[in-house]
Amino acid sequence: MIPFSMLERYEGNEALFQIVMMSVVSSCAGEPLHLHAEGLRGTGKTTIMRAARGILPTITRIRGCIYNCDPLKPHCPEHRGLSASEIEAIGTEEIQMPFLEISHSAKVGTVAGSIDLARLTDVSKPEAHLLPGLIPQAHRGIIFIDEINRLADTSPEITDILLDVMGNKPGHLQIEEAGLPAVDIQVSVSVWAASNPDEDPGPLEEIRRQLSDRFDLVCYMGRPDSVDIVAHILEENSYGYRVRSARNQERLFADSGDQRYKQDTIKWAEEYQKLDMPDFLRSFIARLYLKHNLESIRAIEAIQQAAILHAVLQCREKVMISDVTKVIPMALKHRVDGDTLVRLINEADNKGSRDSILSFKNRQNDRSRDQDEDYFQHTARPLKDMHRGELVNTEKALSS
Ligand SMILES: [Zn+2]
Image (cartoon, rainbow, N blue to C red; front, side, top):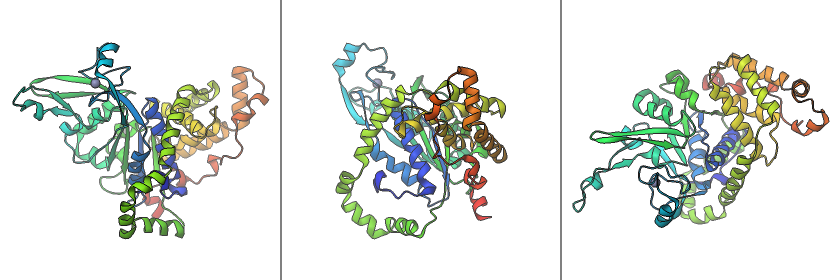
């Protein structure tokens, strides 16, 4: 596997790199950010998401706790209710932030939890215990699901589990096993999914709209459009290249920038906890919700969270209007139809223009205009200059 920091970046996949970083930073700060990458096979969406494993920082947990209990707020059946001194006696350990994968053929027991057969059949001391599944084991980390549309189509039970886990931040999960009391457990997991909306069974929002709405951001992966980049990707995918890089794996990772990303993530996570959105931008987002009758309040929560993270990743101490307009398409693409999205974006651009937002702001806060100069960047590309196709892409749109 090629390190995250060494993967080829181009215009069509840059947004995915960015939201993956945003989600890693947010998860590190303790707030999940759920991502869905849509695109054609071969655009490298799963490669980027899986490679992010290499940039995940460590977390501290109660020693040996398979539920990844935070020593400061233990939540698992075994450790919740323990005093600080009891936890100190058990000790703590550093582990890499978990990154676990659910396949579209997974079973409920594997995902949520099942009876621990090893302990049940232990000859010296047989006990009936629950073995947490992939989701509770990914607490404070990432769960990755490729082909989420197929999972939603074939596994309504697992879809229901995901709805609960992604319903709130943190979410919750119930582990049930016949003969044992059900365990309700809190989980804070960022769910990352990938799918090709043009393959069977179709786009997630058409299969299970509710699940689609749980994703904070959706990113459509474009195709690479330059000969050099395609040739480079071809090289990376060649058998010889993969054999050579497997041989040099350790050196490759040591030399890569992945370590740097880990350090940045920890720094950014601290910044994220400190940074807040100015009131006038929050009102601006609230107006979009009311004016356009957005179905879900999650949509504007996602805009707020993502805009702050975007500012953090730009190493800025202020959230700007450009941070908001940048994330609007990703937060709304799967939540409104294409025409509404375009109309909303055009309007957000006009309404979000410096003058109109300032007039709104000044009405609210009666502050002078000069003070706010640095909220507005002049380098950002206005959304209204983007084609509809860039905002609401599907393969059908690309090939028609
Ligand atoms: Zn625990």
